Length: 260
Image (tube, rainbow, N blue to C red; front, side, top):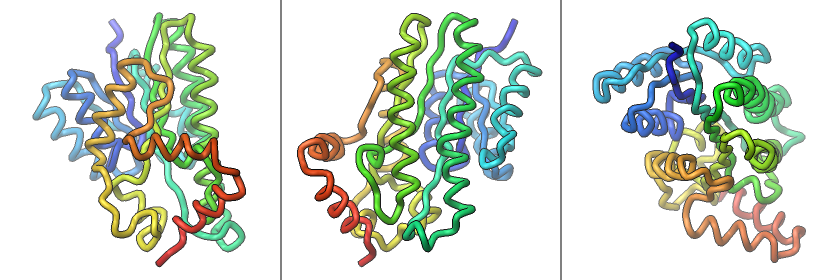
């Protein structure tokens, strides 16, 4: 018999790592995916020791176009029945678009959009055949407005949000739920990766932990919520975007993003 398993991409740190522990606590078998073998090996062993579930890891770089297909092929070869897919891998970059590294900007699109869409497509076909499943796509509160100084990242998360809402509607007849999780700034290594350390958005602000966001995200996925915004403040801010003229919204976001 095929073994049921939950996949988490970007599982070596931050929200992805904490989601892995939450899933394990709920007795879900795991396939953890990221680039860092050292980190994944440690996390996988800790999960197995603590929760007595099956936990494996697979080293893949989702900025490579072949990675999504290779993940799917691995699951097929190992006869793994993926009933939960969590697309958490993603990153951003803080800079004026014209001054940024275009290779990095294209990698953001590759990881945040291309790989996510490809993995959704491959595993949804299997979930339909299996009779159901759950998908979690990590979007962001960045999805609700343009983001000067992080233009490609904000745009990529808008794609994730709208894509998730659309396929959630399409998949209702198949007993499959798709949940777009929209956290705001979170205490994780994202701000270092994106060079956001001196941004007003991050500096001198108490941020929720990755663990808190992961607990919230898991509950939202289990309930089958389509869009789940973490935190009351973030929820209100995303609603205000619909009221304030967009030209003003863009100016506000720019001000928040700028360095002290």
